[in-house]
Image (cartoon, rainbow, N blue to C red; front, side, top):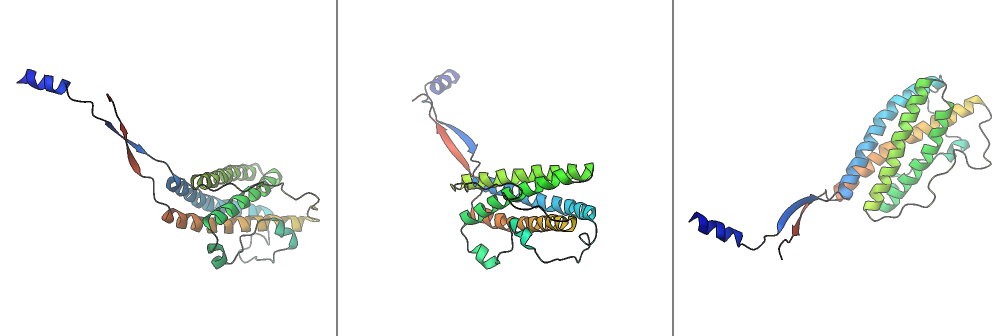
Length: 214
């Protein structure tokens, strides 16, 4: 009987192998971008407190809320009607986030070169690296969804011909508004990616048949 079974098994036709492979698609890319955005929110709270203390009063006072000056318009503003923002397509919101963070990163690198203490320069440098990672991650999300990247998203810290701040107070005001706008962008981006990940199905496990012996 044993010999008969061995012979039967040896003469069985080749059976296709089942290989489980995980498709790493848009869902996982969105989740990673959302997690990075929340991490940057947490990181910015610590950095902003340290930097505003470096600027001194009135910038480090909790109730300090100055009007936005014309110079601050050079920094991408996150102040947009929420209904209008939510009415945009996913592509339009992702493109706006990509352009804004590319631009904000340029301005933030300018702060890195001007910080007065080694510790502050280190923190700014670390945050810039994380923010660069967010820009790359957003690009990955757009690519996974089939959206093209916006053309020419980044720019110099100041547009060509733009005058520098005429005095130290206005320079500090520029820095204050940069951190404020960055905080608002991260807050809104976290909500954007949280909604987007609910719309895109998570990565699925597919079965690939590899026929052998046919």
